[in-house]
Length: 406
Image 1 (cartoon, rainbow, N blue to C red):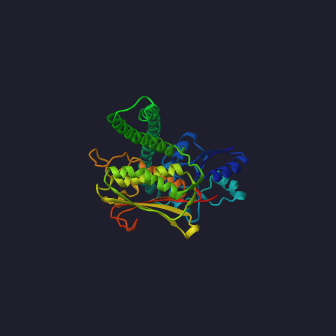
Image 2 (cartoon, rainbow, N blue to C red):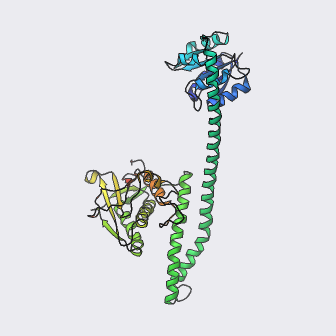
Image 3 (cartoon, helix red, strand yellow):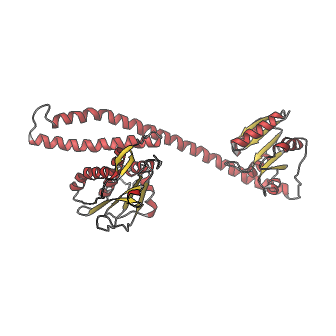
């Protein structure tokens, strides 16, 4: 019985090779990557190495070169499992032979046992050993760099995991004390705890407005943490897309009025029956409108329109187009602004508020409902009878829900 190391990233091939060789009385150990295969070869000292040329990280050529320079493995038979055209390269880097893919089950075991018995297809030229030695040094440097990159990636993944946990915990910690604050403010404003003077009402309404903004930010933080952990649930129910859009525009009207910005509205004709999550869609639209307001100078305009893509009643895609009068956005930032926490101006002295979560939330919601977000700057779109020259954000959803079915 021989011990064979099989380096292969395809699970089905690993299973097939394992069954054929163990059925013939051999012991098989498997590695899924080139780096893992090198480590296992060093520890297991197999009687033969079978390797796929197209493994992840280091390919089969690099692994072969590396094993040929490892003390104690110089004479270990190495057989490459190759596609057509890879045979000569495999032999040149030090393999003893090759087996074609797809594997011929009838002859596979006998072929492997021939190599175990000392058969080799490799023919050494006068300069081959020297060339392999120099190439092996390059492979060793590549291996070390690859290990460093893998370790750095693992550290980044750990940092990302800790960030997600921190974001989720922070959101919950903020949400808990907000509940009584909102409740008592409502009692005070409704004069359930006694009458208010005009000055007291004015102060409480100001506090209430700030509390609503804070509550909206906390809700967005929770949503983004759910997005990053895959736990944001999109409900499926019937709703009217035009009605949800009108509600979002009405809620944003106060924001626009307070900044001296004129909101131009292009209303659709008739109902727009759809299926999806109207509450999350409403919040996504408010984020898009809020973003437009942030970047539009006081006294300028924002235009919003609702549209169908398709032929009348057969339309399947609904869109909201929001165009601002701001400075526009560079081509390099158009995709980045849809990522969580990214802001085109992230400096401490920036003139725009927010933490860079609104458009990321809107993108995920629209994609979950079968659509997406497109950022166009400068736009060439007429909305509500105007062509503004800032940035257009086009949010779309599928009328039939997240998968466009049922």
